[in-house]
Image 1 (tube, helix red, strand yellow):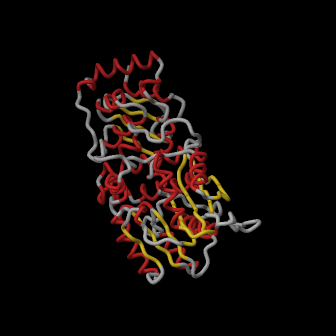
Image 2 (tube, rainbow, N blue to C red):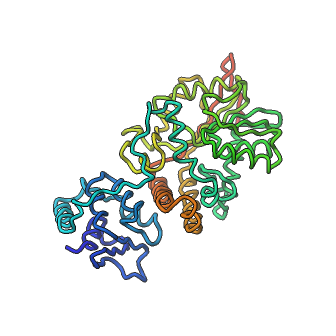
Image 3 (tube, one colour):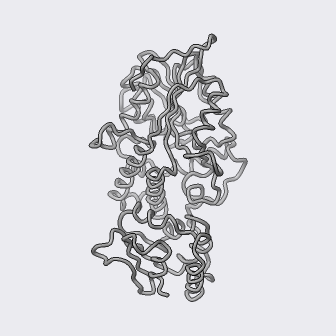
Length: 415
């Protein structure tokens, strides 16, 4: 069986995807009408598919260039998402391994991309290992992130106020929504943990008159964030510090925001994490926790052999909403509001992916083709996950009650 025909069988021949293989075979729609063309460049692509479970083999093939995607990556992943050797019917599996034998792919040395993280040293979620995991993802290149994220340099889910809103407008709305939920007002003190390039502290200081401190484990982010704060003219009220959240300075804050940090904490560390945030707040102070979550509480929080863990977020773990809220309540917080913004994250990723494609050549020049391919693949895959409700984005608002158990909130809040 020709390779292109075999790949069409693997993903389904009716998905509008064209396959071209190194043996000259072609399958699917004509090139001028196909939405996406997937090119199998070498026999090693088949070897990756057979050796690695789930999406890891396909991802590895794409990152090293053994397999190429021409057209919309999200459409391609929609077609490829069901491919896994252990789930193929016996006939297709037999044909795949025959093709492997004919091509000699089984004898070809697997090529692991240089950007793959095989194993981080040390105990998972120790301070040293957390710092290495964060550096792997965030200390890539500030210029690369500018190309992907745009001027806001916000690397978390935006909130689109209208269908016509731009990415920049949506990121500003996200920060403003957090400020409104936290009830920020002039003179208050805000702590933002996992602050990235300081977008939240800048917005809160500039538009709400608070004194804001942000902490990040990424040195690149801290240095760049300090410059953005100075450029915004709010250096007297806003700071970004290169610190572990556990070392954040001070206590008695009126509000704490955690936007996109919980995913890096680890399920077993959720208790100490929320306790540290609770201890930083004054009685009556509010916490807004914004993070990616699983849609259920089944399955492992950490997929050790998956593409995301190997290439994107080493040691990242996702919990369901229930466990997160339970730990917050057991810590002493009163949970007051929750909402799921997964559709907004799908659209955010669409805009980031478009930025990367538009700036592809400069992005590759900045970080190398393998790293750029990782980002293109993971952002399209994440978009698909949010669209299909395989992952979600939740904002949970909580209050630290005072000694009498009171935690004042407006009777009918309008965020």
